[in-house]
Length: 339
Ligand code: F6P
Image (cartoon, rainbow, N blue to C red; front, top):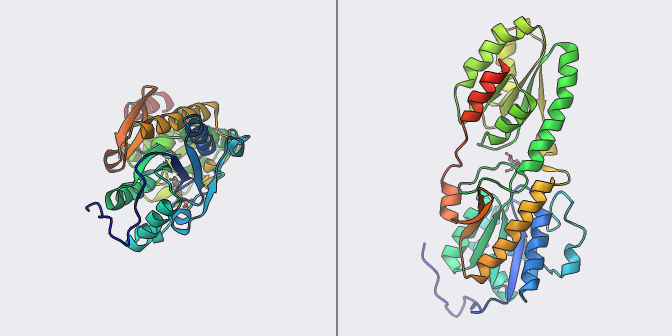
């Protein structure tokens, strides 16, 4: 795609950075509010005006904009969800939708935009910036922690702790009844949340899309480990696991082992809510400030990332197209410890 020329029908952008927009998009994640607050206050400290774009790309298309002052982002640091709301916009996937979005940005004299979200949000930003030369900087906000180039995405740490707390409770009832629980966690096509929460909970097996060793591990537990221990078991299943999620896997296990008492628990959207952990708040704040620094430095189409605690800039096309690799050493550790 090429950058569009400014014809008489295409509104003209201002040259100098004076006013920025900020929005959240895709699935919400705890810590997004902390990022909005940091972006707003860092921008104001640098004499920039801030416009909150509500409901992600859909709100951009509809011009659902609100001015943000420092006091507007007061008291939100510890709140889950996003004060700007979020959406998954199908209209933005169309060229007509993106043209409307661009016109709204120019009409509101928004010179640059901070996008807080995941791969879908940055793919959208990349396309709009290629079509209309909009200056975008991204902040990774997703519980999935699946973006290339950053060790960490906002919301992942809170979701991890939410999963651990929930599974600790499930373990109480599993142990009391001598049951095996298949616990499904979110992560889309990524298994990191299942892997790390499984280790933190002492799961007997962890089933993730990035590895195919776990079927043998599960079978070993069901046929040897479980009977030997005469106890209970937790099997963590990533929602993107190729065998088809916790319900399907549990059905198959019931057929093969009718003697076992099997239950399924799908944690679902509880994983996206709640007050962000201290780690999510601190990292969201660091990344929010870094996003404004990057805009002032005339950076565009990059995502702010953290590499060994240090701020890095990752081009959007790498962040969304390349895979976040998983530390398979963690799987080896889990096998060694839990069977
Ligand atoms: O990307 C975050 C996430 O929670 C994924 O883990 C999950 O697959 C998806 O969003 C669920 O999306 P929705 O809330 O639209 O059902």
